Figure 1 (cartoon, protein in one colour):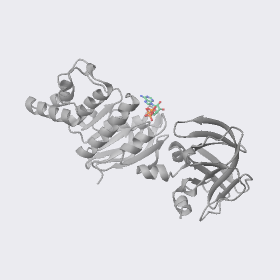
Figure 2: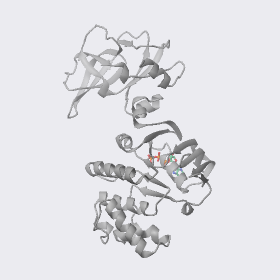
Figure 3: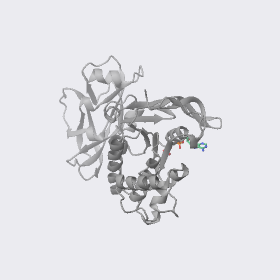
Figure 4: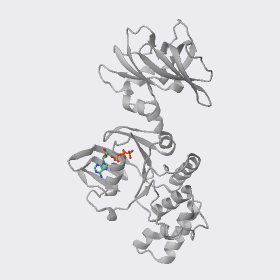
Length: 355
Ligand SMILES: Nc1ncnc2c1ncn2[C@@H]1O[C@H](COP(=O)(O)OP(=O)(O)OP(=O)(O)O)[C@@H](O)[C@H]1O
């Protein structure tokens, strides 16, 4: 049985429905990341689970008990916000023990719990510090300790690392992941950062316009996107519509379907730039084109290549000069192929192609 079980959840504001029949089962100790473009309903889903917005229909269960109609304060769910939401006039210890005080936990017991949590989040000795004296990373660790203090059934994190600078963000995300594995809390995390979702989550749910478009392990979502939307959202930013009659495009795929028109999605990092040649590659996609622009990215150069009507991006360690004629090659395992005639999701189709 799932620890957090969301069934056919429909949520909206006024007459407008934002979430359309969300089904999501989160196992105990699992972390699920919600990914999706701005406005797709990620925060609304967290708010609905917490009881901050009413549901139009559907059910939420935790450990077998239905909580759909329970007020927020009677749900044992805590939220960590992007803005930390700490009390600025309180010390670190007062912030962490706030929820324990509300629950009338004896002082000595609460104090011990605060010290334990400070040790867990690597802030020993900070109990009397004012939170306004702490760095962003330290404040977020206090916010996490405060959320964990009440031993929530589910922890929800809404963009918890967004306010941190890039370097601190990397270290805090590893700390958070390690903590989640060690303490085994069940959590849902919203992030804009795909890499963050892939690194931290056990499974990732990609949302599009209030629906879960794909739910899977980070590897599944990245390597086997089931829809063009997921492929594009997960960074396969090159898309070409391929027709069998295309003159400057060759597509050779094992176990190819009979479809005549495909949408092909692929990453610029998986696209090899080669000297122009008419020879046929064994398998994969080959296009010819003209380099229109180059940009230095540090490890490699990104090339903007025009091939007929299509403009594609391809990365290479070598910088190919502007106006050079090149061949672009994408191996079959790096292609996400969608049959436009049948709108067949690519999963079965791709595994078929990949033999
Ligand atoms: N309180 C509200 N009243 C009315 N509409 C709202 C309210 N909160 C959010 N919405 C609308 O609901 C939709 C989903 O918003 P939500 O904040 O859940 O998206 P999100 O995926 O979290 O976006 P972002 O990544 O930008 O935070 C948006 O169209 C938004 O305008």
